Length: 339
Ligand code: DAH
Image (cartoon, rainbow, N blue to C red; front, side, top):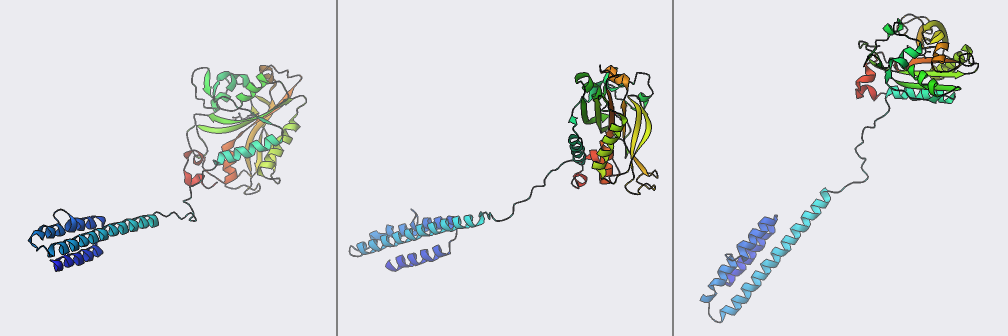
C-alpha cells in the first residue's frame, strides 16, 4: 500500500506538470483527491490493515494527499499568474506609437475665395450685410427699376413662390433693404445665394452665389467706382492685372458698365480660356440710378452712389482653373480635398 501511495504521488506530480489549463488541473484534483478519487479509494481499504500498519499508512496517505493538494494549489496559482501576465503583455498600449490620423475637414473652395474677397473689402472700409433668400418681387425687381413688363425679367428665370414672392435672382435687393434702413454714408458688400431656373451645365446652376456692393455718399463719382473696383481686382488677381470697363446696361444703374480683366492665360491674345476674346468678364456695375435712390427715400440731388455685383463661382473657377461649376456643388471629397 505504501508503494501504491508513492506511485500515486509520483503520477499526480507528473500529470500536474503536463497540465496547462485550469480545467485540467481541476480534473486532476477530482481524480486524486475527490470523493471518488484514488486517494479516497486507498483510505477506504485501511480497514484491512493491521493495527501497527494503520497509523503509518494513514499518516503517509494524509501526507501524500496534502502534498498533492498543495501542488495543485501551486499549479493553479502559476496558471493564473501566467494568464494575467499574458493578458498584460497582449493589452499593452505603446503610447509612443503614432495614432491613427483622422482626415481633416477644411474650407470649401467657394468659402476660401469668399473669405478672401471679404477681407479685401473690409480692408477698404466696407461692412458685410445679409439679406433674405426668399424675397418680395418689390425688392428683387420693382424697387430696382425693373417693373413687371420689363424685358430684364426675362433674362432672370425667376422661381416664383407667389405672385409677389420669389427666390431672389440676384443680391441687388439687399441694396434696397440697406438704403431703406440706413442713411448715407453707406459702404457695404452682401454675399449670398441666388436662384434662377437655369438648366444645369458646366457654367449654369439653379443655385449660385453673388456678392453685391454698394457705396452711397455725397460726391461719389464714377472715378470712385473705377478706383475701388480696380483696387479690388488687383488685390484679388495680382497687381499686374489689366482691367477694362465696357459700357453696358442695367436697369438699376446709370451709367452702367461691365468689368473685364485681361485673360491670364494668353495675356489678351485670345485662347481657349477666354474663348478667343482676350478678356474675361468679372462683374457688372454702375452709378446707382436716381430712381432707385428715390425709391429708398434717399435724395438723389444730395447723394450719389455706385453699385456692383459679381458671381462667386466664376471668380473661384478662374482662381483654381476649374472648368465645370457643378464640381462646386457635388461635394465629391476627391475634388474638395484638393483645396
Ligand atoms: N444683379 C446683377 C446681375 O445679377 C449684377 C449687378 C450689376 C449688380 C450691376 C449691381 C450692378 O449692383 O450695379 O446680373
